[in-house]
Length: 412
Image: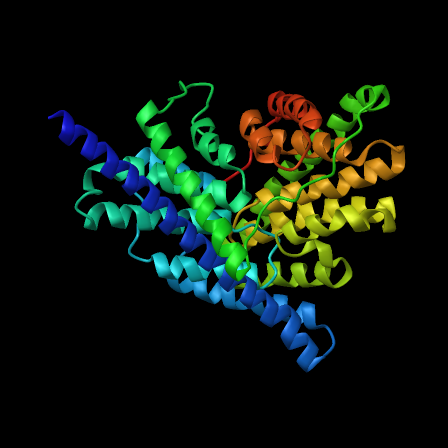
């Protein structure tokens, strides 16, 4: 009996590890396809064709294509929070149209949408996990664990932050009227194994074949008393950005909701593409998720005027909401982080304070307001900053997460 128990445990560990490998391979393939699409559309074609107003035309046509595709298959992909809530509520996520959802997630990213890939990828992975649970003999009684592993591994791989992947789905359950349900140790261990193998597989694939995604690493911070005195004012800047994001969310949801109810999804996504094209023509960094631009900023930010960095961050906030509300469906984590980074660099240039400190505090406070999950925010940013900044990141995220929203809670 004891021998069979140990064998079953070993098989379960192998199952968790295999799940992580498969999830990672799917995510890497998705991001690789996205990279090929972006390279073709935004490097090869413009160099070959060289016609005026390229960005404006491509984004507008992209909006038209996205709208027509959504009219055919429905409003996919769903946002990350929606996926998590459906999984928690229904213990199920549809998988019959997962390939169509995958293409729906790719289109806005390839056409330059100011969105991140986490929403589409989470829906695809969770759908595939449920399919595996229904069709694989060993997985049939492991469906809840399988979906949890899928969500945790996806978030951990996309952001390169394993602890964020582990904690974010748990912290999603925090609500004033609900108790937080902490998974049993067996589930935590299975998630850890899945995340570890996912990250290892992803790193190997990226090292061998290129591609990938992840948070940028910011240089170490020299924090003095001057930075400490400025901590609260800088956090207030991040909180103000968070309020701006929520106000834009309300405004764009209302405006594009009216358009969609009266004229349908196609005019809405086309108009969203037009706005994206106009913004991208004058401020190219407002397009795409912002992950690549964040990686370039540490060496380039001093060449920009502070007002330009602030304008880029503010327009990015509006543009992300325009994309999401108009039907360019995806995630908002990477664009929101980019907003905090852009404004944080501007604050550093204007005040002479350490750049890493400004970035950490502004971004954490901004994410604290929009996510309301200070622990997840801190774990998400942990790999970006030196250890002496993480304490200030946690404080700023906590302050941002407890400020009143005045009825500005993000609409889904």
